Length: 342
Ligand code: ZN
Image 1 (tube, rainbow, N blue to C red):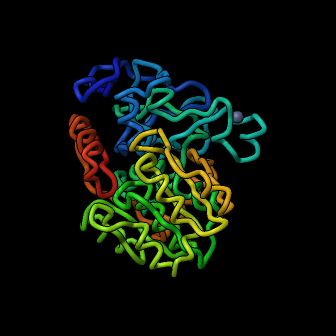
Image 2 (cartoon, rainbow, N blue to C red):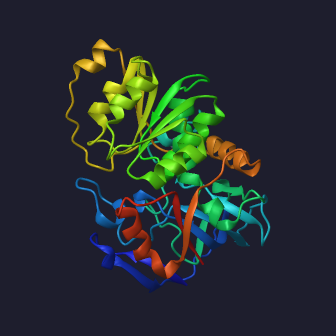
Image 3 (cartoon, rainbow, N blue to C red):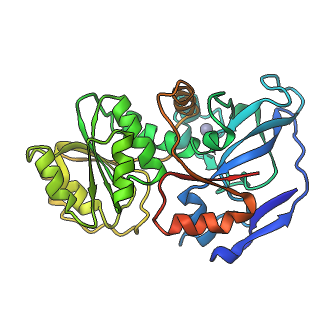
């Protein structure tokens, strides 16, 4: 089978297309014929490498997988050949206290496909039956592969971590990104009010289409001033940020007293330089968040199946164009998700 393989970290030329042996499902496992694999900023980190972090090279990247059941291993019972499925991007031991409490991402053995083990940029993958969810029938394979990581992440950030409530105001950065297009919809579903920031007029338009009450082009307007005006100087109750270094300080300044800052990443850099007095004088809470539980994934897939959340699919590309997909993610021009199809 064909597979995208990263043997060394580096530029786009490190994405190799190779022949790999067909994986065989063991007991409790299922082989999936991959139909689509969603791209995330995580794929860029895996390719470039992250100082101080070891990825298991060589690795097949890609964590958001949809496909059809190809071959069911011994002892599996929930799926039959041909069923449309979505693969959970995260996996954990399944029996430690964190796993049993539904806090999968806190498991010591938690990993993400395509980052800590081989992922879905290939024709076939073998995964445990417990990692599979039925694909919502109303979604295409590409739409389904555009959902898991970003909707799971955004749901966990706003619902589990920040406890966003109806009527609250939330600031959401990088409105064109996958996580933020999911977060705007989830915030609206919860009855919250959204001010989004983005780097272009098109992304601002997308944010309003998705339900943001206001969208600010941060390249032209100081978002702090806009938040101040929007909230009558009070500030927002919640801020969702995965830009990080460029936005951390001014975002803390946008929070109301008692406000919650929630983050799942830091695409602009990891060094936070800010006036820390804001944190204690305003009694702020800083919440880190990574992925979420299988139960939360089932919830967002269910809501998508009912049409109450929708994946924002920007483009589909054939698997061979994985380099083009990476370039697009790195360009910061993305408006929703890029999905590779087979
Ligand atoms: Zn565990």
